[in-house]
Length: 446
Image (cartoon, rainbow, N blue to C red; front, side, top):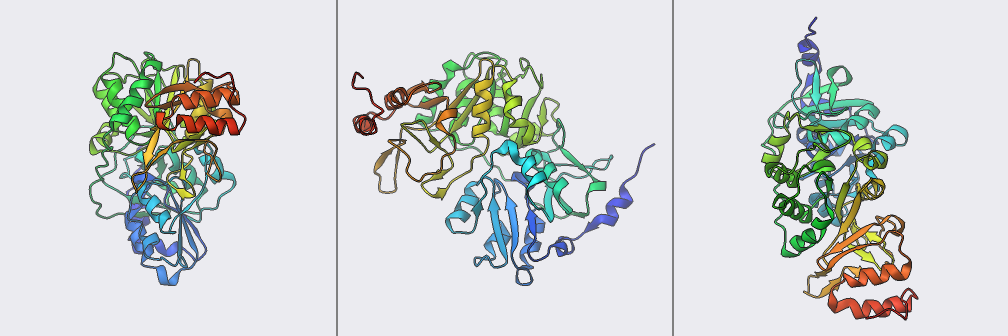
């Protein structure tokens, strides 16, 4: 017998202004992640600024504007937090308007289940289907565990969101929803990836020989993964798979080139797996109702145990700097928050344990500051920087000068290998620094 949810929908439907009345001073409010940002509810909540105090909001990889953060520079009324900074949230952090919450992504569900309070969750979803379900879309990676924890669940219908197929937790039923909000939304932002630089392409070309037919790829955020996608799309590799926390346009390129088939995967065979997605309109169109795609919560996608079960798993992420001991800083520049821990450590551990698996951390060998002075990204030793990945878990490091494997290497071996892929202008200085730290063998040939 078919159940008609029309009346229940009407009973729970209200304006954004009515819905946000449930928020009280001192509450924790969650905006979830990426395309799950509740634009109409955010605007309505910001208008209650003067009557609310100490309302704390969490988000993750959200594009601007976030009205509750921008309307209250004193943070007396609203305090915004992020699990992983988008470029917009990074700018908020620079202004002191966003506080970072450290998290290894496979712990997302457990954090909310065991440790965090959510008084109200506000999340954008696709329109309800005939069975009474709202789809979490490109936000599937984080949304369901947050909604289960929340005292009050408000869904905001965004008519533009792609409807994704999932492994589990890709939807929420109307019976689990307290309020429904409708309204006009602009078309989804066309977040096309930045064009790869020549250095990005060189790093990508250095990695390609390590990838085999049938490998499954995890590509991180930024121009480098896009470069990998471009070069792999032009290579002779075939039957590649996708298992990634963030689905980007790099995978669409691989699919269009015929390289991405998911045929050789030993789990989720025939399915490209992802947690969240951010990219172009064409990417969202590709994800929409695609039987070849499965969205899962990050507790699954980023589980090192799950990743380890995937043969020939190749993880490719970027970083800000590496020191001669093999420690990796990927989320801050000094004390400045740039992004987040995300899934780098999850995939380092998982891909390293995969049969035939490999985990790469990539970076250009140098960067130039605002005064056009070059600096090495390979440093003697971090001093106060935030460490994203410990030296005990780091596998391959790649620059435009080559790729080195640090697994099982001693301190002097690490120093030697890292200096070999540093920019030539900084190698002699790094050797001197290694000597001073007693991690350079006198017998080393230069």
